[in-house]
Amino acid sequence: MLAGAILSLSAGSAAAQSHDAGARPSGAIEIEQPILIDQPGLGFRLPPGFRATVFHQGIENLRFFAVSSENVVYVIRNKRGLFGPGLYALKDEDGDGVADRAEGFGDFAGSGIAIRTDEQGREWLYASATREVFRWQLRPGDLAPSGRRERVVHGFPRNGVEHPWKPITFDGEGRMYIMVGAPSNACMEQRRTRGSPGMDPCPQLERQAGVWRFDADRLNQRQEDGEHFATGLRNAIAFAWSTRQDGLYAAQHGRDFLNRYFPELFTQREGAELPSEEFHRIDRGDHLGWPYSYYDQIAGERRIAPEYEPEGTPGRGRNRTEAYKRPVYGFPAHWAPSGLAFFEADTGFPDIYRDGAFIAFKGGWGPNIHPPQEGYRVVFLPLHEGELAAEPIVFANGFEGPRPPGYPPDLPFPASRNDGALSPQGLAFAPDGAMYLGDAMDLNIWRITYEGDAAAERDRERAELRAEIDARILAEIAPRPSGPAARRAVVDRRSPGQRIYESECAACHQRDGGGVDGFAPPLAGSRILERDPGDLAYFVLNDRGPSDRWSTVMPGYRFGPLSAEELAAALSHARERFADEGPVDVGHVEEALDAFPDSEL
Image 1 (tube, rainbow, N blue to C red):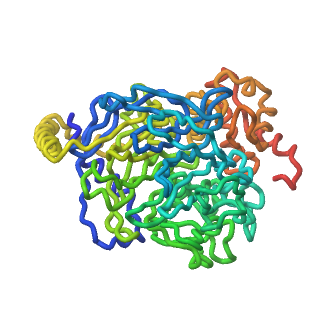
Image 2: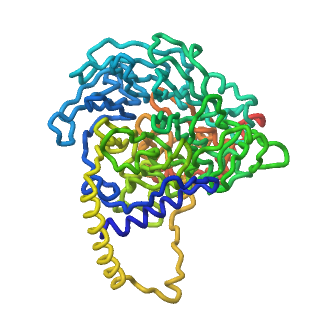
Image 3: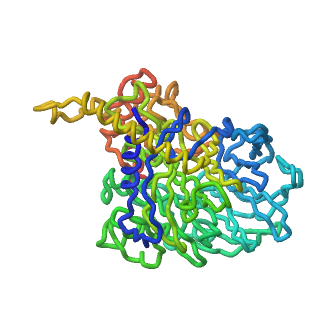
């Protein structure tokens, strides 16, 4: 069945889903949602005239890219193992769109990477670890840098496992901007605990959760040597300066678990749909609202965070929010913006794409998400003089892939963050105008180019022709149910325990119990599930922090949000499916709860 016609509908609906009720486009730019067409063999769709090739495949834990004046693509990884390099240099030497040479270098991992040309015309590669920023001079003919490494900034606080990354970017006046993530979800007094109030004032804002500005040429600076440029930004790895818009921009990962920690204020669906992933222009002195507030893109208003809720305004208060900046645009919750770039090359894409931002969303995260997961796309957001000029359009989508064979028929797809086939991660433009887009699942780096207006017109004509053919075929074969069959609802045949497990646990431990390497342990084959049912219940009711092997944090279920009956059902499903053991009953959970002092419940 044709990509073209059917896909134009999916692209349009995607744009509608992302609408921010508070957005007020100026109308300075007129742009329509293009039809999106399959890229054969690659698993995603692009507008007419665009082509993608696999530039490179196989760099594990790839994060972000920067491209030099010689079109060398530099890649930073967020994990490197014991001995592997943290960065790679890739070069296409024969012009076929595929990297012919690859060299690894660097003994650290991170996520910040950018290239800058100084006043003397020298080109520098900057890259960040979790607490330091380094640079190398790039000399003509270099693949991996041949010069010595220099330390530019150090002394950032330790974040632990929460948002330790330091994305970097530069303006045109020799200044470097570093985003320092918040070390928590919402600055709670009791970390990730149901009903806990927030620390007020939040001490994390002093050295984290904001943007710092430094002299890009001065070496061995400490954090306190820089200027605290802006605050109230939870975590924004999509972070870039636009020369054309003359400003700093970021797409934030919004906070999690509104429903889990405040079920009396937020339904499960509200926890899935809120808060917005906020896209901001960041100016000096801005406070962007975290942790005291969040942006509700459905209502188009900034709301006070429940941890800071005043008496009498449960869940929807507006007090104190006027002091915080409104986003340029509010995208839906949990889409996970994971790349930001501006097309500012002399050649390459059509001119309509010069005024705006490309944002890569890697796809939904977490057990607080109401299936199906969303995101999995690249969006173009039109901008004029730094402000919203038109509603965003979908530039690329389909990364989640088709529903796999054998996927539970009654389960929305994708139900878990790792169920999607591909996951956009990292975004950069080269001087020759090509876009580079990464994939965290199959470890692809794609090179995307525009083949010209003639190719675009041919694509559109083929799409329209196939749309007509497909419409006729569908009209002929479509069943026309009547009576009770036409009104029959889809029946969820999963057991209660399976439904709860797939809603609360599968995002980390996965639906098949396989876990996520380095993040969450597998349950299949785990001896923990073979424990006495009461011991197992006590284990799950306790907090589980990160370890040397697993970076995830599992809040103790003694704080909710599951009842004793629901927790027993989920544990029974896990034991029966992954360990071939008997059920856990409500009595086991209640006895385990009784073992905790009242002060810990």
